[in-house]
Structures are given as C-alpha cells and as structure tokens.
Length: 245
Image (cartoon, rainbow, N blue to C red; front, side, top):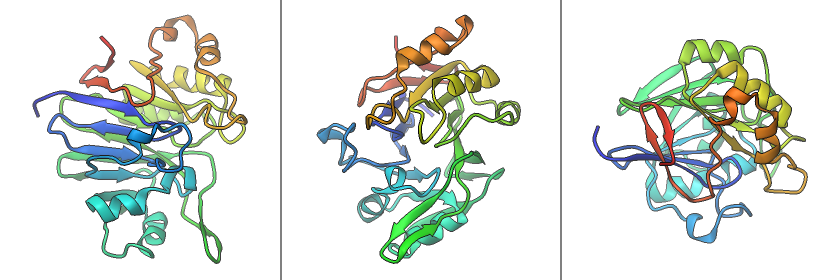
C-alpha cells in the first residue's frame, strides 16, 4: 500500500477512513440530516465500505443513499444487514457478528461487543437490528482503528485491547445515551492506545460531554494522546497511530 491514509471526523459518530489507495471506509454514516456535519461533507465523493455499529438513525440514515450511489460493501450484524436489505436487496452485504473478523479486499473488519440498544424505525414501528457493537478496522501498514459505537464502559474492553490491539480508539463522550467523560476516560485506561478520539458529543444539547472535560478526566499519561479533530479536517493515519504534524 502506498500513499497517504487519513481519518476524518464527519460530526457526531460518523468517521471516514481513507486508505493509501484512496478507498474509503465510512463508519456510522449519518450525514444529510446531521446538524454537526457541514453542508459540503453531506454528499461524499467516494465510499467503498460502510461499517455500522447499530441501527439507530443517527448512525445509519445515509446508508441507503450510499448504496444507491456507490454500492459499497455493507459490514454489520446479520439482523441489521437483513433490515437494510428490505430496501436495498441487491446491496453487497457482508453480515457478521460479535467476535468475528472478516477480510474484504484486503481490509479487515472485527465486531466487538457494546452496551447499548439497536433498532431502526420502519413504517410499522421500530425493528430490532441485532446487538449493538463496536468495530475495528485494520489494513496493512496502518494502526488498527477501533470505533466503540454507542456504549457504556465495560471491563471487557481490556479483552478487546488484548485480542485486537487497536492503537486508535474513538470513544463516545456525550453522556445521556452513552458513557460520559468519566466512563470514556476509564475506557481509555483499559485500552492504553496510541491515540484517543472523542465522538458522539455536542450534536444536541443533551450530549453535554466536551473534549475539554474529557481531557481533564484522563490521567496525565494519556492526556497527550487525545486528538480532537475539527469536523471535516483529515488527520494522517499511519502504522503508529494518528499524526497531526
């Protein structure tokens, strides 16, 4: 793999990972109606993979538009793939479940547990979309990237760290629907990653956790590992982690 890889926060929990060959992984793409996503980012120019951590609309609402435009590989739990497939039956689904790993065209996806809920609102009411999860994205010569999804902190994050070795962890800090800054700081201690990225905050007033409060909650040895990207600003993604230099 050659070229520059990067990570871009698109607001809320949406993350874009660009590989050195310019292929794009979108995690939890909520873009068009996301108030924290700038207008110029709501229509993405490329998408080769979509990874979904759970079914809630603030993590999945753009998946059908991305399927229609790019026909990416859709990585999610079996149930979530089935529900998405009700509207897009010809999409390229790669269903899996928690604890599993699969490689698609040289990119590895692993699903891990998360503590939350998962459903999609249909015309008939909410539909169960399987267990919520986190996702780890790995590729040659790049640091494994862990997106925790929506979750509380839990002790088995240490097992995830030991089994999958993510060097970059994106953790929700907003509180109310997920863990807040105290829980996220404890999670960061369990992972001991090279870099920590806060997500799922500030989109609505109820998501009151802030990067500043998160930094204050981190132990001193982890404060310097916190990276707070601006929405839409790529951060270089290397084999050692993220680099803003």
